[in-house]
Image (cartoon, rainbow, N blue to C red):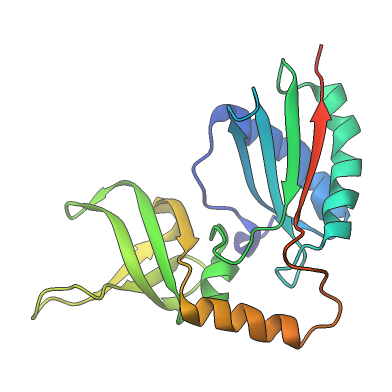
Length: 198
């Protein structure tokens, strides 16, 4: 895995194990794993978020990935009880997990939480003004006068990050959809499958 494909996200041990099982399958299909989350919804729900090289994930992609990972999860049995499988696109206000995500959304607003406090602060919300393979720079709108509003944060220090739903982000997503006839209905993006584990 190259440095630009590395995911920077806080996951539980179980989520990390599941990611290791399904990431190679997703990659073989031409997708990148975005996030794995196990929640107590409906008893237990396994949420898988993925995307293609262009940051898209159609209903057909959801079905294809679900079909491929289901038998592997049945064999590996990472979750030892009945669970619901949800495969979806990252959505407009998506998680930011790779260096390329930050670079793609320079100029948009994001909310980041660090693994540990740096200079007395753990949460940052502001505009992404720069990004490279190792870091992202966030400009805080409420920085006191005389204080540099730009904070350069190492990706390895980030536990969670996501785009904020703003008018500018919605307009960018709308423009992208208008310019791409291959996109399916953006309202349909989740496939649910009930998988029972013995």
